[in-house]
Length: 126
Image 1 (cartoon, rainbow, N blue to C red):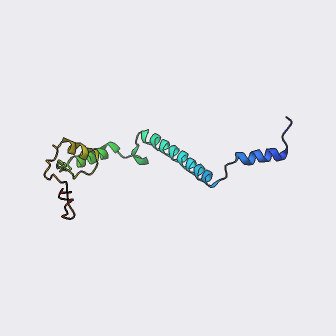
Image 2: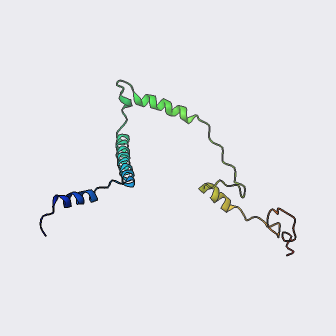
Image 3: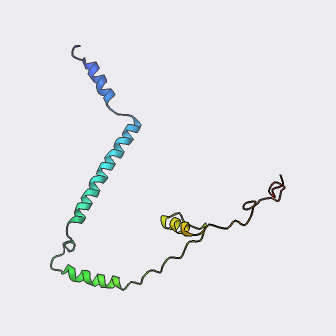
């Protein structure tokens, strides 16, 4: 086939372009994602560099740091956590592991849990 006309070229260009609302949203999200990745990478690189006392010259940063370390070592220790009662777990992994260690509850009622009305059906007659 021959060379495409200007109309054909313009049409192809228009179809290749993404100009819908969702495309604009997706492009904006992708740009934000790339910018955040670059920001996090730069932050990691800055953290990897040795600390030079935040740009202050003439100060002994190691002497000040050791005084802070001594103050933190005097902090009181945390008390050990209390065991979780059956059915009272918060859903965290530690809570689920603790509740799994407990023995199963003993069945008290044959008819199930809370009964709303005293009917024949709730008493198991029908």
